[in-house]
Image (cartoon, rainbow, N blue to C red; front, side, top):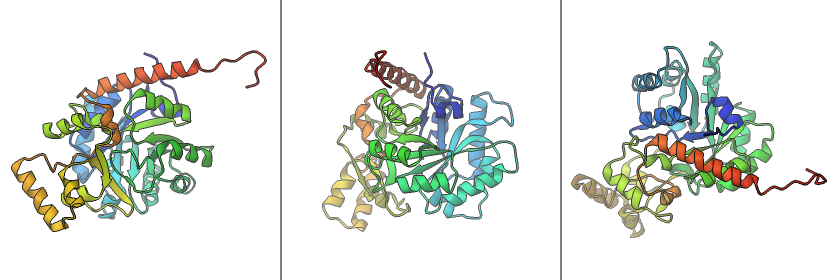
Amino acid sequence: MPTIKTALSDLLNVDVPILCAPMAVDGTVDLASAVTSAGGFGMMGSGFRSSKVLREEMQIIRDRLRLSPGKPIPIAVGFLGWVLDRAPDDPLLEEVLDEKPVAVCLAFGDDLGKYVARIHAHDSKRAHKTIIFVNVNSVEMAVKAANEWKVDVIVAQDRHRIWGHGGAHAPPLFSLVPAILDALPRGPLVVGAGGIANGKQIAALLTLGADGVLLGTRFLFTPECKYSPQKKEVLIKAGLHDTVRTLAYDEVGRTNFWPADVDGRAVSNSVMEDLNAGLDLETRLKKFDESASTGDSSHLIVWAGVGVGLTDKITPASDIVHDLRRETLEVLNKAAKLVSVRRDDPL
């Protein structure tokens, strides 16, 4: 099958510029290695795990990809800025960098620039140079990341469709990406993220000017993702209108530590019904805990973007990459036929 060549696929040395988001779900190691093995680029979320655990997980990926010791690992490790902020003296970032991931992805922090600076400082002492991705929700942040922090790749994140957490006031993806490209015509590279679930959307973003795409929800529908069978059943049954952006799930899940203006998208259920009924937090917490203790699925927290409504079956991650690649190529080839140039036509 032909490759899809962009500046990002060249930078990452991959067949297709399709990235698996660094999600904080069980199975992130399996997802990252499977997507990379299939010709895309895998990312593993670090969550709250220690450097010891992360280094062990990276060694698992190294073994699966049959990489020799010391060779860069073709994945990215994702870090939440606000998690790093909780332990500013912890050398976790540098210890992970010592394992030589090809890239690092930073998101959700009041000052991600200081972590970009730490990565640059660490790389200045060695030959390996880490590719730095930073998630942004606005043109202003993209300009800052490019001009002040000198990042390599900007991930333009759509608040309206993305799974999990995102900026509460970010514009739609198909407005944000061209706005960033216009503001930064000489780079860095731009990746689109949010609500992407099929090759039609990928082709649209690539023709819009994005250098690649990052998918999260689509890769939840895999055996590699260790969501419980109950949660996967919720995903399969969910439609395009069944998710909601709110802090309610973070409140009952006791994970409401995110920066200001960041909320999450999840499949709507009784958690939202309790909120809309005007129940106070103490009562909502009690109902959530009771539901969890009995195995009732009515209050399950299932993070998902609107793309959840475009998928209805569990598929291996490698098959998803291949299917996305095939469909993207089909749409790009179809789009190319829309242009008919005559000899006397100016280009």
